[in-house]
Length: 329
Image (cartoon, rainbow, N blue to C red; front, side, top):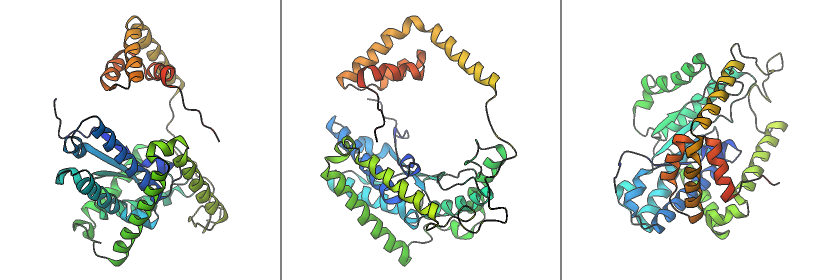
């Protein structure tokens, strides 16, 4: 077996969970529980913890709530304890690596210039919490695909924090602060409580069968939107401190959209690609389906299929043997 030590083969994401409406506790609990589910699965396939754990990475959202100030600390503490004590992993396996993206959900189409302020504060949370990598969102994301100008401003947030802000030049500048220590303990306890709820429902996979995670995310999203709508959760320029024009949705000077010509070019290119490989697609897709049905590792079959099949064709083939999710309220 070839080992690629610097390739992070699986990114365990919580960002989409937060963007769908989950609060910071649920995002962290669901993401970490998913991570431990991966660990259990790999171990069940006969792999040793130290052969794969160092190559797992995590991806969190940083909103503006206080819990986000310690999301990395809590994640690393829980992960290290479990890998060391339960799975007997070595020191490298115990080190959780994570990426932060600032919260797209916290950006608003009203007073869009204020979005850079929110992103800067979220980036400070991430950097002071020692994230391994960081993505700062563009201020106009709530309206359009980011422009070159807005992307440069987003990059400048990181550059100014890292190159100009004196406190950020110190490692772990807020370590030991009472609020940080207290929040870390409180958030850890809340995440472990959520672990118990998931465990009572048969673990991650069992909870998914009863749509526990989805239901909780939807409830938390509705709660957030209710508070935002009635003003209990203040958002400057959106539901409080409106400007004299009432803070209407801003129309950007530049909106990135594909032209009709670009759209047709892509459609034609896809049709030509499918036609060109039509004769050899059948066996490849059948092999992919066979491995999926048997529960085999489908990665190699997917790599072969990607060379001559479109994403739509691959998805359709897998839907045919595995079914397709349909939302149910």
